[in-house]
Image (cartoon, rainbow, N blue to C red):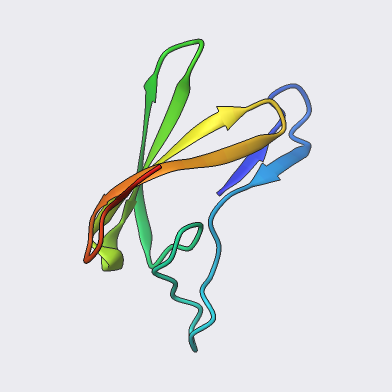
Length: 83
């Protein structure tokens, strides 16, 4: 996931990435394995991005900061975690 500045499309931050396995699939925090859907939630003060991480069987919740995307928590998969 990449965060871009709305005004000019400039890169601001990234969250999530490929894992170390062949093919790049990841199952740890800040890694995805076939992200297939997005939803936006939260509010103006606490915007949230929900990512369907299909092959890890989980939903990942990313929060927004001015200069980054923060991995808040995920649920589902083999070992759901809460941060």
